[in-house]
Structure formats: structure tokens, C-alpha cells
Image 1 (cartoon, rainbow, N blue to C red):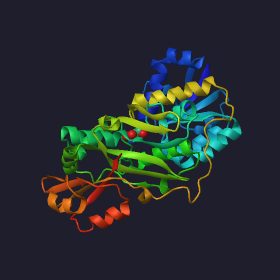
Image 2 (image 1 turned 180 degrees about the vertical axis):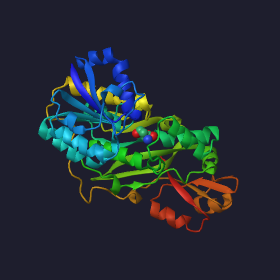
Image 3 (image 1 turned 60 degrees about the horizontal axis):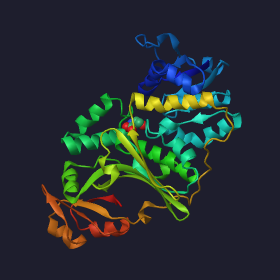
Image 4 (image 1 turned 30 degrees about the vertical axis):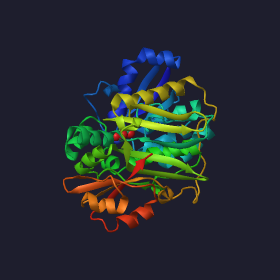
Amino acid sequence: MAKIALLGIGTVGGGVAELLCSNAAQIAAGAGERLELKYILCSRPHPDSPFADKIIYDFSVIENDADISVVAECIGGVGAAYEYVKRALLAGKSVVTSNKELIAEKGMELLGIAAHKNVRLLFEASVGGGIPIIRPLTQCLAANRVDEIYGILNGTTNYILTQMFQCAQRFDTALREAQRLGYAESDPTADIEGLDAGRKICILADICFGRNVPPDKIRIRGISEITAADAALAGRLGFTVKLLGRAKRLENRLVVYVSPHMIGEDKLLSGISGVMNGICVKGNAVGECLFYGAGAGRLPTASAVVADLIDAVRHTPDGKGPRWAEGSDDLLADIDELPCRWYVRSRTDAAALERVFGGGAVTENGYSASITAEMPRTELEDLCAGLREAVAYPVLD
Ligand code: HSE
């Protein structure tokens, strides 16, 4: 019997506790022994919880209990979670976590401690919720040089965009619904302004390219400027709008960023709706692979956390888990160096837009939009200078 401790009993932690109970036999078969949830660390009592008898408030009880072999961290953030994960690893316990902020910002350091202490630090749930992506990248696709990875990495914003574009729902109503369903971060600004997707694309870049990409070094643009006019105009041009995180090799450097993109309706990612996420990997041997599934939510995320618990219990650590090296000042290329086609929306008529970008502009409710030829952002900005209220988003080709 493996004894484990859970940190946090919010949306994800609650799902982990529930899954450990409801699928106990299946989990024991996978792990080779039963998993007993011995403690749940909380900051306050939860008298109505079915797990109330396991709740404790002092992390040192877990840290000093030699019976606990694995700790599941579901607190979030880099405050207490960072302290407890570090202490658990230093105490010789393996840790599994769903915490993208922690891995994006402190992953390099914590993985170093895990290797030094010969324990595991697993974080499958940190990107893509229930979608297997970390293990496929580090194992199944390990023979490839990954040239590009991009995807819909945030369930809340994909849910909001889907509700706005397919059901004509207002932004605020869709956000409230995403919060009610347990998809959004405690501060949903992290979802809407792209920070959550930024942390996730940094983790994917760290793994694919083997160098640390700090979230505060990449360009991030969220969905707060997307309007109902964009939905109508993009649709008429044969595109849909998705918030993408993207990391791409540019010779010896990387372009890593988050931005809304126009995606042609013939592309697979354009059909990914609601809370679902989709991640596309381009490997030099495998070609293009798409990973699809629920990117947020209680049980989908718990599915990945518990799979990591099973892995941590079943496999003896060998110090050979995923690691990445320190980045460098010249690792990241500027997004402006990446030429692409652009969607330009302006409060003008189609003729004015066509004079600048050529034919094919469409008009809707006082706005016009057009798809440009391929060009870098600097050239685009010059061309947009004379256009009223011009806004541009890259096209994913
Ligand atoms: N707030 C995140 C999302 C949760 O909406 O995708 C999963 O990381």
C-alpha cells in the first residue's frame, strides 16, 4: 500500500481525492498496489467534505512522515506551493503537480532538486488538463527534433470565444459560466490576458527545445480586444479566431509567444470548441501530430494528476526524468522576425483597406477586414498607420 498526501482540495485537488476513491481498483491495478490518501493539507476546515477526517493544516506532518512516498500538489501559484514542493522533494518524496505557474517559473530548479534527491517530479496535468502531452513529448516523440509546437492551451478563453462566436453570448456571461464550471483561474485575468497559456507554452518549449524559456521573457497578448465584429468578419473571410501559444525554431533561436490567431476553417484546430484544447507538434521524423481533449476541469485534470501518482508509485526513480538547461539572452528571437499573413480589422470601408492590402476585403457594421500578404509586423505597422482603429492578428498558415 502506497501512502500519499494531497496539498489543496479546490477544483483539482477535490477531483484527485474523488478519483482516488471512485477508481481505486483500476488505479491499484495500474500502480501494482493500492494508493491510500493519508493526508489532505488545507488552509481551513471543510466539515462537509467526505474527506474531512484526512484534513491537516501543518505541512511538517507530511514532511516528517516517512510513510508518505508521494505528494500531489494542487494548491496552485508559486507561494506556498513552491515552498511545500521544494520541502517535499528535499525530504525525499516524489511530487506530482498540476501547477503550470510553478513548473514554468521554478521547474528547472525543482527538477534539479528531484534529480539530486533521486525522486520524481511529474507535471502531466500542468499543460492541456487531461490531454497526455508531456509524456508523449518526452517518451513517444523522443526520437524527433521538434521544429514547432503550438496549440489552444487555455480552456477558459476557448470556451469564451466559442460562446461568443457560435452562440452570440456576451463576453462577461461566458466568463461567468467558465468560472462556474471550474475552468477559470482564481484570478481569470490570467486566462483572458493569455498568462496561463504563456506559462503552458513556456513549459512545452522548455521540454521540446531543452532550454529554459521564462514566461516573463515572451510576448503575450490575450483575447480582451476580440470583438463580435471580428467573429462576423473572420467568418466571412473563412477564418475562426483562437488564442494560441506557439514556439517555433528560427535557425538557432526560438520564437515563443501567445496571441489570438486567425485559423482557416479547413484546419483541424479551427474545429476545437468549448473547453477543449488541441496541441500540434511538428517533429522532423513523425511530421505533424495533434493532441486533443479536455484542457481544464475537475476530473479531466485529476485524470492526469492521478496518472502521475500511479507512475510515481510504480517506477523507481532513476534520476533520468525530463530536465532543461538554463536559457540565454540570445535564445529568444523577436516575434517581429516571424513573417506571416495578417488579419487586419479597421473602422473604415472595404475600398480603403483594399487600397493598402489589395482585393478581398469584407465589411460588417462599419468595420472592414482583410487578409494581407506575408510580411513582418514592422512592415504591417507602417501600412496600418493611416487606417482608423486598425487591429491586426496573425494568420496560422
Ligand atoms: N484556467 C485554465 C484553463 C485551467 O482555462 O485552461 C487549466 O489549466
